[in-house]
Structures are given as structure tokens and as C-alpha cells.
Image (cartoon, rainbow, N blue to C red):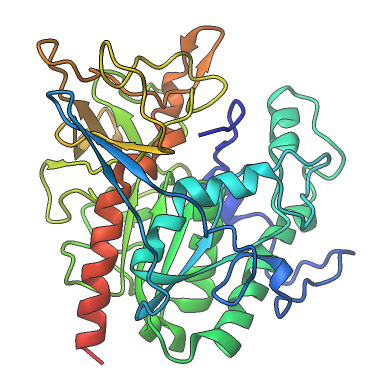
Length: 394
């Protein structure tokens, strides 16, 4: 997965939810989402960013390998609407509407595989850039960084894309909302303002809000969303799956930006295990990037199989290597990932995905870089089952 350091940089829930009011105005003109070029992925788009090679090498514990092909379903019965995370390397604090390598890569990593279960809609939007966030971290904010109207631009774009989709593309079909990091924050706002308790809620198959901290009332399934609970089974529809991933060996430290809700008394961060929606542990069906590195900051990755060259496919699956469960520890709720290492077998005993700075793992980020990859197979399976359940209720 070719991403630069912190390319999946999370916008906090506070920034994502309070980045201006719905009435904030900016000098930027509205995008015309009737134009295919304003979308990364859309069923009628030529050069669709989601039409990519997702071939996967399945590497088993004994070192044997098989190749798994992928085929999208152009006649899928439901839709998926996706908002990508903070990836833009454009100068300034607001990105342009031209898809760069960052946007093209992230839909390959996080979205395109859902094409087996749904028609995919992924709008471009003028997001708050990685460039702007880095400058803020360094204490040198760029002009406009703290302007609520500037922070509102990306949200306004996504609302406009959603409004266009509902009016012209949806035609009564069920829809799954998918986001990661900043994208999850934007979708959380959109769901709260445009879907929760509104007519559009009847179209909601589910919401997959990855790498975020969805506020729910302590011990409850709802909270910020009043009538959209967290999911407990794949036959449940109109619900949300939300989590942030950490290794069991590197739990969130006190300064982690994930796993807890700040400034909202009585609320906690939702955690739903995509590998076992009913609770408890489950096997993660990961589709991991087979690039030389997950991120420029993640450090070297060991070979998939000792003594063998790495496969040539863009993705690798490692059945049985990874399990996960939602845990509540030290005031944090999060998805705890465990690597079932076996030094006696030839397959790798670890995966890449940590943010590494100066040779040291940044524990506060957890496995944020691969929140989607690490459970991709589970999420696709869940969407397929939810689609069946949603259609059965029609």
C-alpha cells in the first residue's frame, strides 16, 4: 500500500463533527456531481478507479500458495457510497478535485473489493489535506487551517454528492455507507444530519465507519445516532459497524486519539468486531497489500514465506494468522488484533501496518493504516449477508 507517513492521518471526532455549521459558506463554487469526473468510482464512469486488479495470493501456514481471482458484480443488488480518508498531498489546506495517486490507491486498498457485493459510488471531495494537518502538527498551520468555513468545504461536497446520488442514482436501492478516518468523520456527520430519523434511513443497509470513534451511550447501542444502532448480526440492517484497531501487544497509550470519546460525558467509543458481530473473538480475513511496504514509515516487512520470493499479486491473504476481538481496557474500547505466530511453520509471523517514526512504533496510532485491509474479507461478507437481509424485508 503506497502511502506516505501518516497519509491515513485521522481527523478527530471533534474536528470532523464540529468543522463548522451546516450553514457555513465559502467562496468555492459547488461541484457538479452530475459530471462523471467528479467521482472516483461510479458505475457509468469510464476509467473507473475501482476497476483495478485485486488478484490475491492465499498464503497458508504450511507455505503453500494459491491464487484467488476477483470479479466485480455489475448487477449487484445494492449500492455502496464511500468517503475516503485523509490522503491528499495537494498544497494548501483544501484539496483540488483531481484524483492523484493517493486517491487512486486508497480506493484500491479500501473500497474496490466491495464491488463483488454492491455498485460503487465514491465522490471526489475537497478534503482537509494531509499537507494542512502536518503543518498543524508542526505548529505551523497554513492559512485557513482554523477557519470553520474552510473545514466545512469537504463536508459540503460530500453532502452534495450524496444528494445527487439519492436524487438521480439510487432509485430505491439499499445502500451501504463506507468510510475511514476523515471519511468516517464526514459520514458520521452526514448520517446524523441527513439519515438518522429521516426518510433516507429506510435505504440504509449499514454504515461501515472504520478508524474512528463513533460515540454511543455507555453500555448502549445508540448515542450520537438516535435510531441507528451498532450491528450485532449480519442479518441486521440499518445498523453501524465502527472500530479502531490496535495490536494486543501494543495497546492504546494514554495519548491515543482512538478508542475513547472526549468532551461527551456518558459516551464511549463504539467497537463492533467485523469478524464476529455477536461478540467475542473471530478470524480476520485480511487482504494485505503486497507492496514492499504498507507505508513509507512502516519499516521493512518480513517475507510472506521464509526462503521463498514474495508472490507477484497486488494482495496477499493469510488465513488463520489473524484474530480479533473488541475489548475495553484502561478507558479505551477498540478492536484488539492478535497475530497467531507459529515459529515452526514457514509463513510469516507478523504483518506490517504500524506507523513508525524514527525507527519507533507510534503506539497511539495502532494499526490505523490497515483498519480496512485487516478485516476486508469479513466486511465484504457482512455486506453480502446484509444485502440479502435488506432485500428480504422489501
